[in-house]
Image 1 (tube, rainbow, N blue to C red):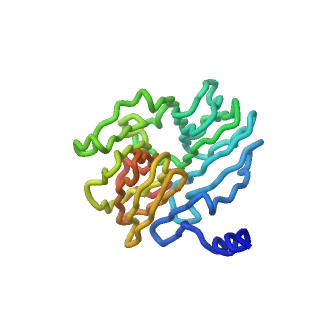
Image 2: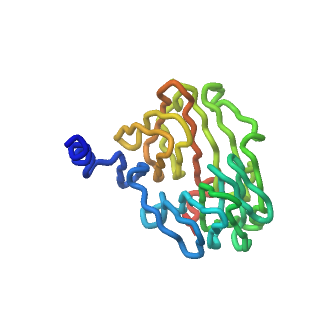
Image 3: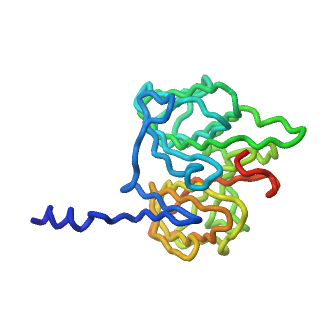
Length: 251
């Protein structure tokens, strides 16, 4: 009877929410499917053009020896668990790689792995070459306090170079730390909670969030975050960057 009551309690309930200008995608609502070219791997697609996003973000779950298909544009990989062989090099948890469009880049799992994958059609600048292949390690990136707040540390994972048309950062909040203001801007975000918990304002809605949750924020979506609990909250966040607003989004 207790089991039946528990099942009935959860039928039809989810923390996930999909609105015009934002999405909260929680693990209880994840659906896994292989994308073209994947072998021994599956993707949880969090954000895609079908919802109005100008990029695609998914979590790839890979068996040992599993591979990703080729990317049609530029691609950023951040290893959550396990290790990869990417571009002939090993990439382990906390490390990442950016590869430019049309690079013919091979990605294979050296062991069972979970990987953040961000893909975007590259938007070139006149007389500007695309970025080169780039490998990084979050542990080697010096953090800085957002607007001088040392309780909210930012690590900028990609170089501050206008050749890149998007940025990826990690942000770590000590318990009680918050964004300094409600932000409203032209950039869109893809955000994966990596650790801890907190409360996110998206539009006029307020959501409790924790490690494993994904958030998409469309352009001009009001947004604010505060960390709750006894341990730091941390997320990985994408934003389009370094391009004029009149440029065609995602082209």
